[in-house]
Image (tube, rainbow, N blue to C red; front, top):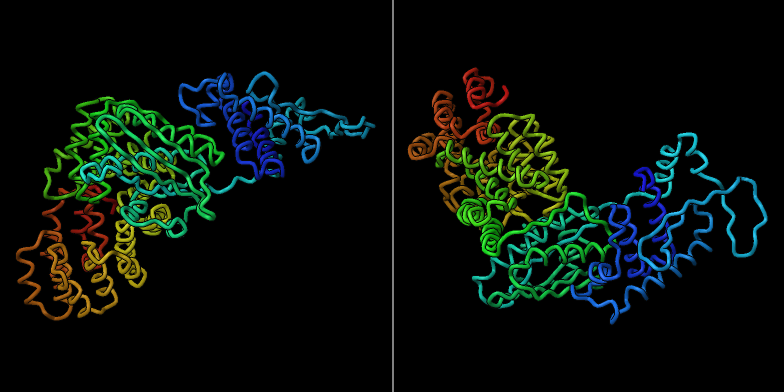
Length: 593
């Protein structure tokens, strides 16, 4: 089919599916959309009875078309329903979708007629000659676009949440498998056109808790929820899953899979396809299918589970299993991408051997991009690498490409905000990206913390305090976040009480600053003795000691532009702004002045 006819066909398909004969019949609507999209994507010749039975009607791989006539029966119903539509509601349509007898490949036929009305026998249809009359004059494309804009309005992506798969064998040592598999299904679904998939952090907020689907849908702003279970027994794997419409708890689709552990990637693909068919959507163009060994994939799932369960600390812990996974299978792109992101997260910590971390990061990114240049996470890691190297234009291009490939990824929006936009002082843009991340991952404590921290650093203390207060009581950054907001609001004594409540080592630089601002200067000086350089810089700034604050910052220049950009944005260091030595430090680490 000529590419310029694709959109008019989709416009006609939407009209048909919106008609009274199809709107309430999910099965026939899904069947029609399936065959049309297969034809439009160039796979119409693959529409055989056995393939449709397996891929659309959920029959097993050994489906016998002689014993089960579901495809033939439903095709007959579809032909009749299409005929009814074009006699009635679609009588004036300029394009007809047909399913010719004897096959399952759809056909698309345009109707030509003169503009003058003519008598017609009973049962025939009068038509107006439309865009085909213009095609010979070279204007078809313009009219097709007008037709598309006038008849079909692209609907917003459908919000869907994936609840953590339940580990049925009762062995907590196997939780990593269910958690990692859940994360991978979220990733697979996130690159399907028309779906807005809630990120894994918010989904995992419901792990181990009794589920009320209405509550889940409300908290995650999701119209559909995928839930299920995993049972691993020896080398056998059983997965049950169902997709439920939240508003009436109607199950649109369910699947049961009994497989060898080596087939786990194929099961993910089947689940994703089942959901697509259930929601009558088309697969995204960037979707890939990976093959790897059971051992490498098991290590990969263990690493993903660590990142899910333990946040930033989990990225550090995940490096070992990810390195082992790439050793088992040097061609498994997701493992290299995950490893690259883990190195990027760790490479900003001054306690690490930063040059060595950067070397490892660069090697992992290059391998991930070589193996799969369409993997969003690989572009995230590449954006982080470029930012660490102060290659800001290339970094921005990489983050934007990652978002293009996977718009639902809160990690991509967060990385773009914190690694690039914030470092370059583009504060409002950074906050916009973090707000998008929050929409995609509304229950993520880390995103709440990032928003609170960023709003405080932007001088929006009341708003920042609101996000800080949403953090769980045991979140390690909660007191720091709230204390900084109170400092900005000049409620210094309250801030000191907050910092002392848990007396965390990470809070002591801001405690020193608060002491200094409240007149307890000797307490601040005593505290500064055992602090890290960045904490000393904050405390000395509170004391008004620019010399020692700048000296402390200079000692940590090796952390690079991203980490230094975050530090220099602190309002507690406002004393230093405008000082030529600060400009020299920014240039030294690769930040714009």
